[in-house]
Image 1 (cartoon, rainbow, N blue to C red):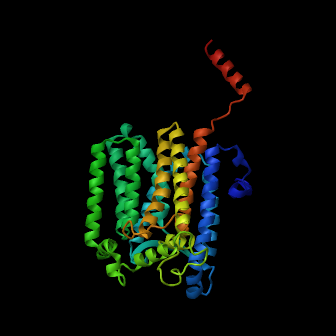
Image 2: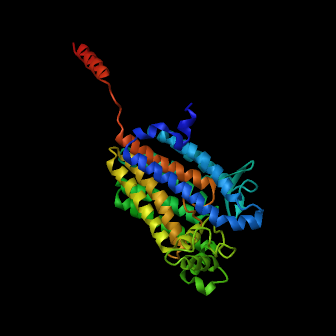
Image 3: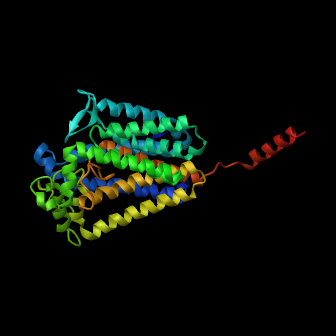
Length: 397
């Protein structure tokens, strides 16, 4: 068992021995999570006070999730990647089973038309979120070993990956299924798989998305309303038009922290999928640009870690973590600004949701772990080295 100080990042005394990139990334991640909690406080207070009689309802629960997520975050920081890669296939299979359970009547809980949750007592479990860091680990292993794997093993894991995406799609949850597919596909691209295989997979993914949209009316309406939201301002375009008005109201410097007007019962789900609109209104164009610069710095550090890593599998883990954290953030921002069709993807470490918080911090911890293992070798003392040389001489005669 680790002492308590090793379980709470702010009290961890050993981080000074980490590589500089690992330390910087750790503090950026913690700052991201804490600032996200502040943004959530502002975006959720009014609606929580009106609906639940407690303006701090969402923030208190998010703070509890953040505490446990930080415990998991620090535990990953002290766990060897070889061990994590070893348990990844079992975690993928376990979460796949849980995703399938959400599809069974009476077990899955439906919210906003999608059945994504299982409840263990009072605790909501969203397996499609929690599986993401383990998909990074398993995808990195499969595609880093691709030339050396038998076709039976390749097809087995490709089938499991398809089953994960297909089960999520049946919830229905096109955005998460699409993100999962893009994540695995980009890891495969980074691994250098043949272009013919990559192109065929991409075409199959696009075709699946088209079929899903054609068979789910609400997804088709989202696409059509995205093209001209003002035409259906009182209907399917309501969310996006309110989001655009919030962002536009922020002007250059913003209205000030806590002073958003659109969050006062105009902008729907302002503390989850459209939290960026509240942020942009309160912090303005300057604040939004600063957030994008922060994401750029985070991704640059992540890619630098990948380039410095001597092992291909570690490179792919780092690339996958960057794609998930920064890529999902950019997709969420693109939705809020009208650059992309409306999806149900949260803004990592900002949006309300404990499962997303845990998944995001586990992913960040994988990136930090790659940085640590890439820069910190095993130290062999002079005495141990001399003993090893003496044993080799004795063995040689």
